[in-house]
Amino acid sequence: MAHLNYYKYEGYGQRSKENLWYSQAVRVGDIIECSGQGGWDCETDKIVRDINGQIDKAFENVEHTLKTAGTKGWVNVFSIRSYHVPCNSEAMEAMVRNLKQYCPNHQPIWTCIGVPRLAFDDMRVEIEVRAHVPAETKA
Image (cartoon, rainbow, N blue to C red; front, side):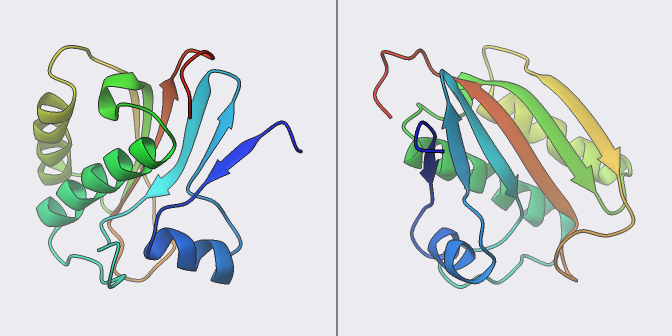
């Protein structure tokens, strides 16, 4: 698939590409798709323990992934899918707080899903996004 551009960031992104065999983002035309970002530290891979901290970190990781792929960050996001263990009021409040912080001038579409488990034992959130970047924008 030579027409697709795949992206990874330093640290966790590079290790995931080597050890888990996946990329952090892909560009398909004028759309950047990000793989699920969790509440891990990009340098140490440690997952923040509390749900508020995990969601904050996951939003930071989405921003980092988007910028690595050549976007301006959350400003380009039009679609969000979040997975939660559990999907409760504390998680929802943290998500909304971050959405207001990272998307103050637009409201992307959002699907929020409660799941029984995520990839790693301590994961409580995973966020996937789609971002629009016009084809003439370099990535």
